[in-house]
Image (tube, rainbow, N blue to C red; front, side, top):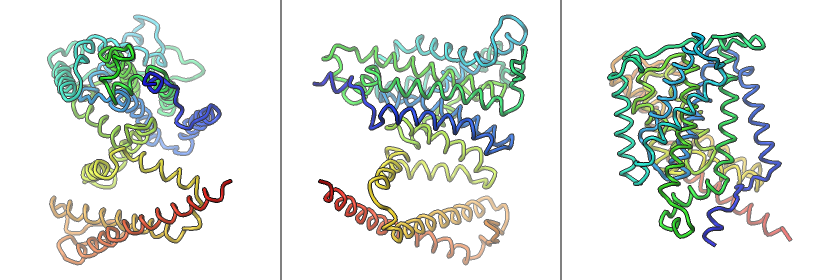
Length: 427
C-alpha cells in the first residue's frame, strides 16, 4: 500500500486532453506575448521572465519536490552561464561548430557535472546541515570568481557576442525578439520535462523523501541516492537557466554566482508556492515585475518586496498559488454572480488596503530619505512634513484592515452555502 501511494501516477485532476490544451494554450501565450507587448524593453523583461521560470522550476525540484533547502543554487546556474559564454566565444572564433540554439546544452552539462561532482557527498545529509553546506559551497564558488580571473574574468566578468556564424532563415539572434523566442522554446521544453518528471515514479519517490524519508528504505530505495539524483536533475535545469541568462545579457560576471542570486531564486520560488508546479512559474513572473518594473516607479521597491514576502510567509505559507487555487475552484463550482455585492465589497477592501499601504510606504520612504518635501503620486501632491497626508494614508489603510476580514468571511460563508445547496440538489 505504501509503495503504491509513492509511485502511483498522479494527474492532480488534469486529464490528458486538459494537459494537452494547457500546453497548447501556454505555447500560444509564448508565441503572442511579444506581439502584445511590442517594445524592446518589454521583450527583454519577457525574456528575463522565461529565464527566471526555468531557474525557479529547477530550484523547486530540490525544495518543493524533495524537501531540500539550498542556499547555493546560483553555483549551478552561474557556472552554466560562464561555460556558455566561453562556448559562444570559441564557437564564434571557429574552434568548433555549435549554433547558438544549442548553447544551453553546454549549460545543462555544466550544471549536471558540477552537481554530480559535489552531490554524492553533500546529499548524505539533509535538513539544516545540507542547507549550510550548500551555502558554504556557493560562497566558495563565488570567491573563486576573483581568484581565477583566467576563467571567470575577474571583476569585469567574461563577455561574448551571441551573433556569430551563418544566420539560418535570417535569424541572427541580434534583435531581442529573436532571443525571446529562443528562450521561449527552451522554456517550453524545460517546463514540459519537469512537469512530466514530477509525475513519474521517480517524482513520487522524491515526494516520499520529502514527506517521510524513514519509510523509503522499506520499499527498496536509498534516500541518499534519490537526493543525489534530485540534485543532479536540478543542476541540469539550473545550468540551462544560467545559459539562457548568458545568451540574453551576453556577459557573465561574479554576480551570477552570488548569494544574492541564490536568495532571489529561493525568494521568488517561495512567494509563488513550492507545493504546486505552477507556483514557481507565478513566483518568477512576480519577481521580474517587482525587481525590473517597480524600480521605475518608486525608489523604495525593496520595501514592497519585503512586505510581499512577509505577507506570504504569515498568511500563505503555500505561496500565492495556494490562495488562487481555492478561489478558482470556488468560482468553478458556485455561481459567483449571486454574491456580486459581497465580492465588490471585498475588492474595495483590498483596494483600500493596497492604496493605504502604498501611501504609507511612500510617505515613510520620502521622510526617511529627505529627497523632497512633496510626494507626487497618482497626480496628487502630498506634503510628508504635514499631518494631513499621514491622516489620509492611515485612514485608508485602516478602512481596508477593518473591513477585509469580515467581508471575506461573509463571502466565503455565502459561497459555502451555495455549494451546499448545489450539492444537495444533485441526485
